[in-house]
Amino acid sequence: MYISQITRVDDHLVKVFQKLYPQLTNSRKPPTKKDLEEIIVSDSTTLLISSEDKEGLHITGSLSLAFYKTPSGHHAWIEDVIVDEQFRGRGIGKALVNKALEIAQKKNADSVNLTSMPARVAANKLYIQTGFKQRKTNVYKFALRY
Image (tube, rainbow, N blue to C red):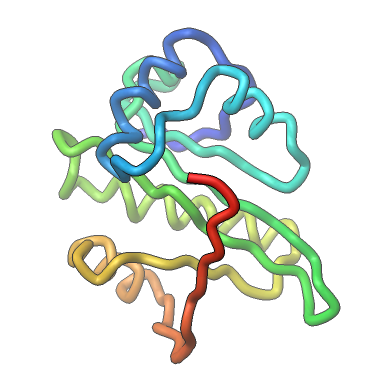
């Protein structure tokens, strides 16, 4: 298994996200080529993939890591952790999360946050095993679109 940062977008990557993204949510369309290109050129976002090969042709999962600064510190947020359902249970999610934590540490983030729906039992177990602590807070969303 290989974990790498996406540095270029091609049609193959777009096709992979068209397959992976519905495994995360049905409420949004998969990212377009333009969306993915905007993500990878952003200084505030890192897009990781897991693959079976060093070249990244057989992609098995992905993770987004976003950074932002506020008066309270330098924060990182893990979003959109997706492991292709046919590859689950092989440690891919753990490898993606550990790579994200390594990158966040290198970029001097003070903390890394994420959210996960309670129904995602395996994902929640993974986050706890990785060292995340469940916060006693409410998460709110104000939808501007969708």
